[in-house]
Length: 297
Image (cartoon, rainbow, N blue to C red; front, side, top):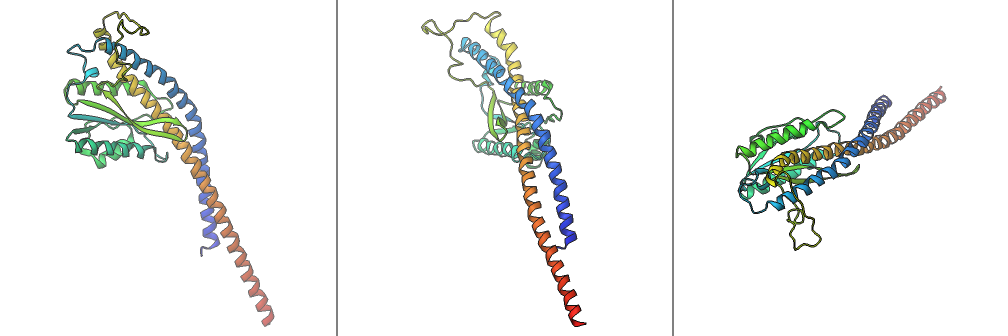
């Protein structure tokens, strides 16, 4: 049985830990409000970009020599996976879920005879895949540690992906990240960026036979608009995913720190009971010794 001194030291240590986890929970909650607002504000813009490109792609459907970002290289052999994680830990299974989904995707693609390359984003992804799949990493991008997610991170990452595509080093590019649902739920998901994937309705070109379909006149022409918008769309989709990652990280950290604070409280209560019982036992033993000594005299 532990001594009273050891129990006091253990209780004091857990109380200090509880103060830290409680403070981290409040900081994460404050950051979550801003990050969630940014992520939700970016969703309509990213969806509008996809709809606009869907109309343009539908108008140019069937034409040869389309942009690589839209139609790809025509091959499906070399896949680039871009896992998005945070720079810091203490956020439960947030980063581990991305690692797990990325590994499953790697194994699936390799079992199909595909070549897989990795471009991890965030310190946690870089450290993990450098240990497990160092031979697949072709580049890496550090995440962001500030309060806001800079668009320059998405812009630079989009330029890297576009350069790899134009150089013929990749055929398909897929993001792996956590979709933010709420503070307690972040769903790992894959989003293909290259070639651009659109819904059937988005890629359908309007024809006169469609009575309710909207008719558009593009100026400049569709090809020129696609050349301008596709690189921007790539950056926007990456930026929206980064915002989702930032919101999910803060939500996961707030939940993890809340659980840690509750667990620390339960441990303190349990150890306090043990401490009180041990103290009472010591007092009782001392009284017995005093009474026994007095009776012997």
